[in-house]
Length: 184
Image (cartoon, rainbow, N blue to C red; front, top):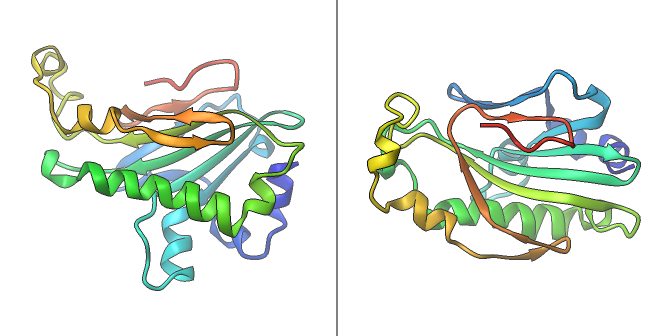
């Protein structure tokens, strides 16, 4: 139902895409997921065209249908950066809250807040490797507290009946079917 409603919206349907990717960083989609059960909205493009001044916004919103009226939502920020100077905690939090407060709870609340739509989960995912963990995995074991830890500790208000937290993933994690968690 939610995916069908969004597909029929004359504004949102201009920003659908087949993948969530930017500068060699992406989130992969499991091949077992039916294409009709997944919708990727390029939020960065939406805000670039629809809002002036443009607020900070995440790269993508992915809606995954798990059953008739049950969905998973993934709000995704992609960063191809060489070090922690490539992002700020506040900047990433602002991107996620733009999607939650403005896109989902204001502009298009009539779709996202329908009584018959239930969310299994809403995930806020920051995909980046600012400390080169993918290249040198043993660095993770020796890491001192840093910006990623600060980002993961941020409390996001409750949305859609869920307490939300930011999750950090190394490039390029995969969205699996609804029965499996997000893979690294």
